[in-house]
Structure formats: C-alpha cells, structure tokens
Length: 251
Image (cartoon, rainbow, N blue to C red; front, side, top):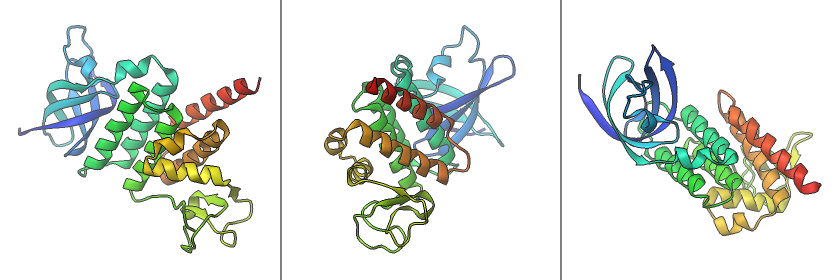
C-alpha cells in the first residue's frame, strides 16, 4: 500500500481492539485523515504520547480503503502537556479541535490547519486571555468555512452600521427593520470586540472589559452552534467556567 507523509494536528482518538487506537488527524495538505495506530496503548509503545489530542506531529501512514495505518510519528509541537495544567485552556483547546473536526472533511485544509496550530500554540503559551483566543479562533474558522459573520454592515441588506442586533440565523449584525422580534441587542463595545477578534487586533481585544468579553463569547458560541451540525459540547463547559468567574468577581 502507498504511504503518505504530512504534518497534522491530532484531533481525537478512540479505542479499537485491545491495544490500538483510531486517530483522527487534521493534516496540512491531506485534510482530515483517520488512521489506526497499532499497539499504542501498550506501556512499551514509543509513539502513544505523540498521538494525544492537541499534539502537532510529522506523521506517515499507509493508505487503505477506509482507514490508514500509522507507520511513523515525530513530534513537531507538544502542546498537550502545557494545556493539561490549565483547565480553562484545556477546555478551550477541546472546543477548538471539536470545531475543526466538524468544519473539515477530506479536502485539503491548509488554512484551517494553520489556524488551529496557531490557536493551540497561543493557548499553550498563554499569549492572550483564553476566552479571546477561543472566540477569535471560532470566528476565523467559521469564516474560512464560508460563514463569516457580518459585523460592520447589515448581513441582509448591506446597509452600513453600526447596528444593534445580532441574529445568528441571519448572518450577524442586522438593521433594526430586519431584526425579528426579541432579537439580541448588542452594544457598540461588543461589536468592536467582535470585529477585533475577526481581524486579530489583539491590542483592541485585550483592552475590552470583562462584561464585554462575556457578552461577545455568548454571541460567538451561539453563532458557532447555529452553523454546525452537531453542538460543540466543550462550549457548554467554557460557558459554565465563564459564569463561575463572573459570579466570583461580583462577590
């Protein structure tokens, strides 16, 4: 069987047989790949730790009818250990790989690969506040998939903003005469933060207040969940952590 080699992010793995795992990889050139890693659950395995979620690897596998067989793995970016010591960052990273898993299929996805690697690296290095990294990743990943939220103009009419209503089903910010009854009203600071997260303007994003970040996170989560076929379970946990943090700050 022919072999392929590529850089990849480990998205998830599942048990198979007594000592094997099926590894789901997001590859730089080959898109999403599922391959069997034989014997990695044995204590003598030399590659098991390299195939943990969040790891970036140089991997070689043989192709098959449905599943490949992993032949060789070398570490490129070891982010799993750095994320394991911070539950909030770990949960955000889990939401990222869940989202990447749903947004990508078997087509080449170099931009999605690079975006995910950058997000995991930023979380591991604590480059920015965790919630901002996650929300920026989600907005950009959805944009690459064709679901870029409209922030500066009405998603339905194109009328220039600022507008005050965000409606996930309509594509983002919409004018008042387009917004359905009960549509979420969004303040200008939240709109500014959403735009900064989309563009990677970290100085603007980091200047935002806690309440603004919380409101933006809720909007990003709703927009993400609306567009994906299956819900992102980890976003529920990030929401819980955010609520706990807010409650502690008010005490």
